[in-house]
Picture 1 (cartoon, rainbow, N blue to C red):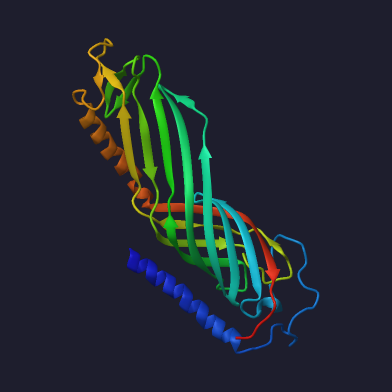
Picture 2: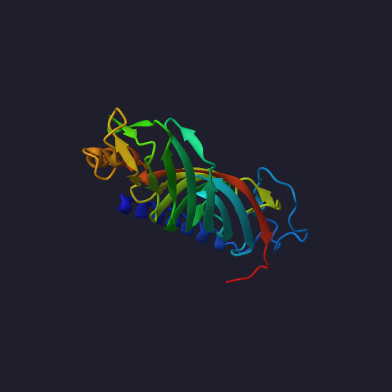
Amino acid sequence: MRTALVACSLLIATLAAAQGNQADANPTLFSDGSSGPNRGFGASGGGQVEPSAYRIERFTRLSLFVSASPLGLGEQISTNLSPHLDLRVLGDYISVNTYQFSQRDFRIRLNMGFVNMGASTDYYPFHKPFRLSAGYLFYNGDRLRAELKANQNAVFTINNIDWTSDNADPVHGTGRLTLGGSGFLLTAGYGRIVSRSEKHFSFPFEAGVAFINTPHATFDLRGQICSDQGINCQPAATYPGFADALAAQLVTWNKDVAPYHIYPVVEGGVAYTFSLPRRRF
């Protein structure tokens, strides 16, 4: 799988370099032979028409992109490498705490933490805003965490077995689902992140997948469990059969989340492009 991903990334880079070399053969920036318009960028947004202005020197555009995706709220910085290739550095972060809410026999407080960093190359095979992107997450600490406490007279099911919580020492604990791990990113999208026209604003969109570590769920329950009649209460860790039932339930849950090591990514946002002083390399 990783070999195929590396091959896809190299293919995108190779095609972009080939088209970039073709563009470099013509040193002019615009079809009229001039080095570019003097009026700078306009301030309108939306779609971009990219005719002769497409042949712009490398490192003459800088874009700031604010986005939202299942990886979190993102801030990205991009620049142009060639007429068909951009470089993007990305970072996502969000931490959300929910108020305590009730779900069946438990009160639950949920925390969602997403933090990751990576880089991507954006390849535009045509003189259109359609793009293919290949990247890599260098750091990924995404995870979900839940704190829970049983309500009075709670009866809950673990591994298809009903268990009764002790009202004097209710069952409580912490569950965690890790979605971390570095890995490749492959996406396709529409909309220029680094504008090639005179427009500052663009509204890029992309969808694809991130290849992360296999998600892993853990669950730790404490407190006391009683018999059906609410007597003979014992700590959850030593109550007959409960530890084995919890272990078996975790096996099932981990099988359910395992396919999400291919993590879906759907991202959209707004980008703003600046013009930088032109340099020749």
